[in-house]
Structures are given as structure tokens and as C-alpha cells.
Image (cartoon, rainbow, N blue to C red; front, side, top):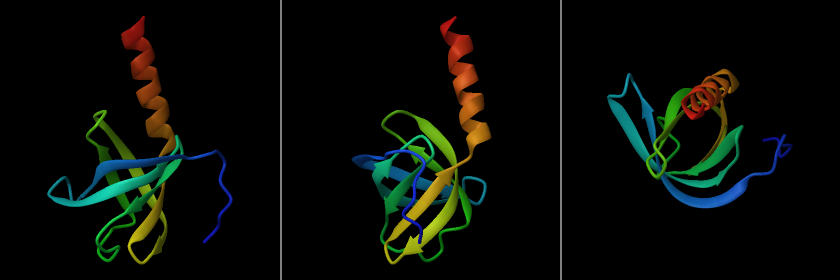
Length: 97
């Protein structure tokens, strides 16, 4: 597990949901830290978490495409798909102006 990160992550205790299998399957989690490029999630068990999934953050309605970076017992680290974030940013800009 590499501890090198591109940016500083903000500590959180946000509820989240791992969504996969075309939205049919979900796993509740706690988002322990979060940045624009990734997050650390805590869940009952990391067994059964797929390599690619969506992370739903109900508090602000975000749904981010995530890739599993590491797993350690009940914690996993994920990175977010950069292209999707750029698309979301472009959408916010067009709505603002």
C-alpha cells in the first residue's frame, strides 16, 4: 500500500454507499477521508467489493466513479475517475453561466 498522495485529503465521517452491479447491489460505508482524486472508506467487510464501482455521497448528491486502489480488512482506498470529474465540472460551469 502506497502512502503517497497527489493532494491532501480532508478527514470526514460522511455516510456513503458503494453501488455496483448496474445499481442492483449496494454496500453502506463511512467515508473516512476525501479529496478530489480519492477517498478512504470504512465498511463492515471489504470482501465482495468490486474493482470498479460508483460511490454515492447522499449528503450532497454526488455519485463518483471509483476504482479500488487498496484494501486492508475493513478499510479500502479508492481513486476517482478524472474524466468524470472534468465532465461534472463542465456541467456545473454551464449551469452557472
